[in-house]
Length: 178
Image (cartoon, rainbow, N blue to C red; front, side, top):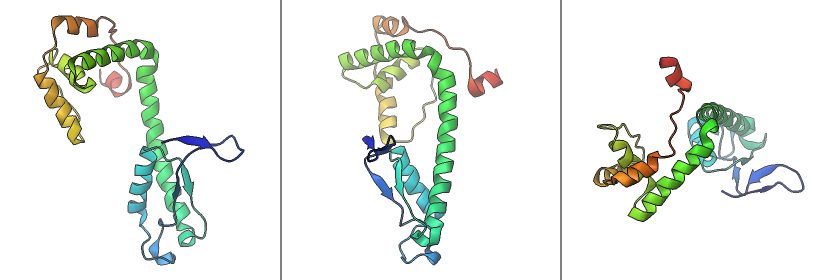
C-alpha cells in the first residue's frame, strides 16, 4: 500500500479509502447487498492487513449501523495489533541490529543457493532439532518447509549464519512458563 497526506493536513492515510456503505444492518439500510457484522469485519480486517487505513462511513449508511460495525471492527483489529506489536517490541527491539546482520547473512546464503530465505532458515534449524514445528497457513509455507528438508547447508554456511548469533533472554509467554 502507498500512503499520502490527507489534503493539506498532517494526517497520513492509505491511497485507497475503503467505502463502507456496504456494511451495516440490512434491515435498516436501503440496499439488500449490505454485509452483516461478521462479513463486514472480515472485509475490514482484510483491508487493514493489506494496509488500508482510510475508511469512509456516514450516519446515513444503514441508519448509522455502518459506523457501528466499522468502529467495532477497527477497535478489535487495532487492539489485537497493538498487543502483538507490544509483544514483538519486547522480544526484538533490543537485538534489532544483531538480527539485521543475521537476516542479511540468510539472504546472502539464499541468493548463492538460489532458494528462499525460509528454506535456508529452516535448513539451519534442521541441523539443531529433529522436527521443528512450522506454522503453515499458505501453500508457499509448505513449499518453503519442503525445500528446507532438501537443502543441506555446508559446515561453512552454518558457521557463517551462527557467527553473529547472540542468545536472547526469554520474554512474553515463554518468560512466564520458564
